[in-house]
Length: 514
Image 1 (cartoon, helix red, strand yellow):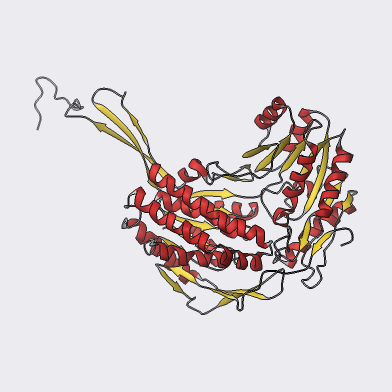
Image 2 (cartoon, helix red, strand yellow):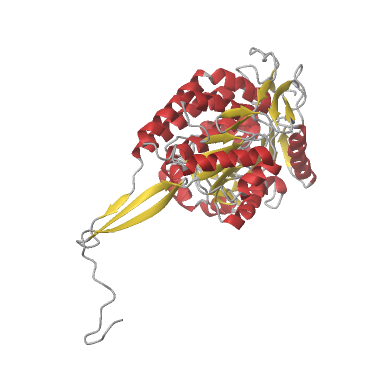
């Protein structure tokens, strides 16, 4: 902890009692049939943050059945885009009105700083409003040049029942990247949040009810991947699965969904590089690198967990990142000045440390950190800001997603070397380029294999811009027009105008028919 910035004070009061999360099925809040519940202990405060109903096949079947019925009878898909948009906009208003309540429970369950929870939960309202705008502006195509007696029309229809499975690291934001877009398209949904952070998703059910969403259109089942998520991925009455989480689980879902050939959209892991050229604004770049690795304690699929720095500036640049890392405020997440909070579970903290210790044993140099961080009065479920140098491309710490506040440094001399290092990865979620030369930025952006390229910035995002990766970072897109289109099927209508179709069967001359 020496020479690091650590905050131990607390300015936001803890709730008087743990949040009680229940399933939301066919418009009603219900407990599990067997009465089982799960406890979530706060990683940052050690208190009981929430108790959640623990779902089984019974609740999952009921939720899928409710969603299927609601889709088939058209109570939601049959509404106009304006009517669906009105409901989504009312949900957005309720999200903003309950921002602090959402943020406090998310901070307790996840360990992230209260300021970031506020930004995530309150900011998610913008995603709901943008999705509402798409509900009103969705359109297809017409083809009027197919002949004077033919009119072709391409329309878009909701895909049907969608299973939405979300992770623990951004539980409310990632839910809002999926659910409002599916609802805007006219789909009905079954949602399963992570059992680690179930409460903000359970709270959303209150807003959906108050906003006037018809019963059965959105159903929420709490619990573990097995049995809840497994059944949601394989059930014959589910038409699509939208999943965010680890690449390993994403592969399993793809295999499981194959028996019914349902559509699968996946947003998975990343090992995202920022490439630093000597002509860049190096002070700005160093600050962005520091933000990119420590935001949400590095527990972020878009974390810039490796930097590729030109050899001429690597020593001075890394020194600056280390200096900035010492100034980042680690500590009590219930203080608004805290920038980095707790690691989500002790098991995950041990996994992070395992990557660091293995790299050290293989010859890497630890320039900063490399161990647990004790925060007085809060606990030891924190990890020091860590910078690792002298790595080789075959090390696990370079190739695998550490998902913690651990930055790996690589070097390059030429653009070709920078591109080779960038693309030498099983992942392709995002990448960044820092240079004042627009030609350098454009060349890198076109050659880098990633779903998002940031130039002279990092992690700027907007509801209008699609998000998703290539290679083992996933398939399909979220948010934006492309994310909305994921929840739609395309249907072509071929219409003959008037009675102009020539008969195919023509009686032969002089031949009798019987």
